[in-house]
Structure formats: structure tokens, C-alpha cells
Length: 199
Length: 199
DNA sequence: CCTATCTTGGAATGGCCGTTTCAAGATCTA
DNA sequence: TAGATCTTGAAACGGCCATTCCAAGATAGG
Image (tube, rainbow over all chains, first blue to last red; front, top):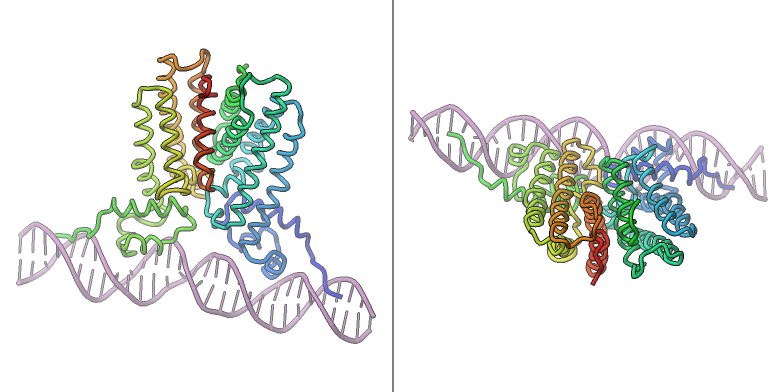
């Protein structure tokens, strides 16, 4: 007998993601959310709870709809080195051009802000960093099996280095770093960390 | 004939740095500054101007009193590889232990937040990133001159990679990353990027 | 000591914050 | 169609925001 929602919560969450991604938690007001979604305050609070819970939901949706697909692609791409290179190429393009240029990564941004004072957010950040490491690890091992790596390369530390590098890319891209230079730097890093020589 | 200030602006600024460093711009209120410094609102505004100008002053002081000394030490340390290793060791210790543990780097934090929407802040961030690259570049060249590097290592890209890596360290340390693991990862990265083999 | 000049304390400013409340509207079952 | 149940709109809440104002206090030159 009840009434039914007059909107699609997931679509709304996509809009909210964009707000928090670009502006962060503290700088984004509920009024901004109301303006951007067209929703009413009542509907917002009834559906998502308060601001903090809304941010958590948005962060989780960002991870699910943006980060994880990219990591999944990397993990299932068995080509080894080319897969890693392509992952970073796509990352840099996303960070530097198009709609999301200079937005950085919502996860990286959350690392640096006050967002991570919420233990639940902190847990999401750690989990996602772990996923990033695992995906890179899988790709490095894949490269290793195809003898694309120098002997003695440790897959674990190589993945760790590349994961930290990704955070660096995310950070600097938000400050408007030059895409071409990022490409060059990342290519050199991949070559170095895998013990291969650069083109 | 005028009255004179009843406090030391630089000492006050040091306290303000700690606030903005840990909490960021948006999350830190003027009231927090008043509480932490013991200063009055009037004195604050008369001395530093508004909140934004206070943040800028604090960021510049952070750079001058914390970042630049470390970079200067790196730049003047002519030992090459050991200098680079020591720089990162000190960085990780600062980020993970003691008073500033889990505070990250105020410059890295500003990258990811809304702080960088101020063009003047943005300029400070770019300048400081450039300084980081230059200092690392100097150290890499120094290593090169002492034949500590593999032939064909490009000093420019090596420095770029290490600079991005430093940002990654700063970011992850704020999320409570394990110091030991960071040390291991960084050591591997230095070894890789310089073409040397790891211990 | 007097007074011009700056500093200081503390209250007051308007505005925006996240959140709540509640009546009016919409929906689906029976 | 009657009515129970949820959603929606709009106003209102207390509280905190950055900032300003002004009277009272402190200083140093004349």
C-alpha cells in the first residue's frame, strides 16, 4: 500500500559521487547535493541517512563502478607488461582529460583529507589499496610467467611500487600535471621496476 | 607611538601549521585557531587577514620550515645513492612515527583537497613539486657521477619517478600504512629506478 | 604625563551548516 | 474506491561559520 520512490537511488548516487569526488566531503554541502540531484532533503535523509552515510555510500559506489572494473580488467588481462602499461595509460587519460580531468581519484583524495577519520571510510581505503596491489601483483606475475621480466624481480615489491606510483599519479593529476610527462614517467617506472629496458 | 604586538607571529604560525596540516583547510575553523593559539580573533585578522590568507601563510611556512630543509640536505649531500635512501628513510619515519605520524605531508594533502582551487596555493604546490624533482635530480646525477648507476639510466625520469613515489608515501602514510613495508617498497623502487640490484 | 596609534577583548553580524518536523501528495492493496 | 503507508515539499531548527565592529587597554614619542 505504501507509496514508492519517485527517483532512482543509484542514479542519484552517481550524481553525488561526482560532487564528493571533485569537492571532497567537507566542502560539499547538503544544499549542493539537493541542487545537483533535484531531490528533496527529506528524500535524501530518508533514503541515505545523514551526510556521512551518504559519503560512504558514494565512496563505495565510486569503488564499485570506477575503480574495480579497471582493476578487474587489469587482473584478467593476461598479457603481462602490456596490460600494466595499458592500465596506467588509461589511468592517466582519465585523470587528465575529459569530464573528470583534474578530479584526481576519489580514493586517493580521501586518503589526504579528513574523510579518513571515519573508521569505515578508512577500511574502504585500505581494502581498495589492497585490491590495487593484488591486481598489479597478478599482472606482474603474469609478465613473469611470460619471461618479460628480468631474473630476480620480486613480484610483490614491484606491485607495491607501482601501487604507490598510481597514488602519485592521482595526486599530481589533480594539480594539473601534464599528461605527457606522466606517461613518460610511468613508462620509465614500469621499465625500471620490471628490470626491462625502455624503448 | 603605537602599541606593539603582544605575541610572536612566527610562533603562532607554527601552531597554525599544525592545525591545517592535520585537519586541512575546510575542516579547520577560525575558532580552532583561536583555541590553539590563544590569540584573539581581532589579532588574527589584523595580523594575517582572513582564513584563506592564513592558510597560505601556513602552507608557505610549512614549505620553508619543513620541506625545504629536507630537500636542501638531500641536494647538498653528495653521496649519491645513500643520500637518496636516507632522504626516503627520514621521510617515512617522519610520516609514520612521532608527533606527526599519520598527518601526511601538508603539500600532498593540499594536492588532493579543495585547497588547490586557490591559484596562489596551486602555484605553491607546483613550485614545491618542482623543487622536489630538482633535489632528487641533483642526487641522481651525483650518483651517476660516482658510477653508482646502471649505464643508460636517465636522471630526469628517475627523479620524476622518485618524486611521484614520495607523494605515494605521503598519501598512504596518512592512512596508517606500515612503516616497515614502506621502507621495503621504497628501497626496491630506488634500486629499480637506478638500475642497481637490491641487497 | 599626555596623547596619538596600534592592539586587544568580546560581543555581535548575517549567512550557511546538517538535520528535523509535519502537513500534503502519491501510490498500491483490498 | 477507501484507506493505510510511504514519499515529498517547504519551512523551521539550533548551532556554528568567517568576519566585523567598537570600546577598553597598552605602548612609546613629545
